[in-house]
Length: 189
Image (tube, rainbow, N blue to C red; front, side, top):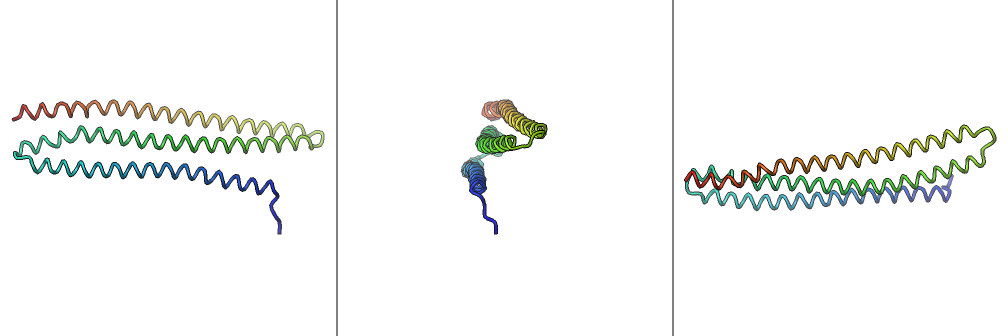
């Protein structure tokens, strides 16, 4: 039976702790999303009840056709707001998870670098090329990870700016629809 060395035990504990930290952040994001969904569901049910009351209180059939148009503007605004909140939760969760994983990667990279340095000290003469290859591989991996992280951050920023542009574009017709509807309703009477 082989027992773990103290270094291996510490490494395993660190890995488990990191896993639970990442899982905790993801779970927090899911909790926020669930709370947002419940809030949206409550608001939708209340709004639907209110709209149904307005529909049943409408006396003339002509009013039945103008009321759904009155509901469209606020509904579109709320949908855009909901989408923005979902994006904000996802972006915040992604940023927190990325930060944790980056910190773990840096610790791991430091341990590997220390291992290579120790191996270089104990290596026989003539093994400089192998040690240089190891260091080159570590540097390439570090560069790749940094590039992927920057690319991910740029993708999130681009998605956020696209969402803002879509929200601004989509909210204009919703607002103008809400503003024109009462005028159109009053001219029909």
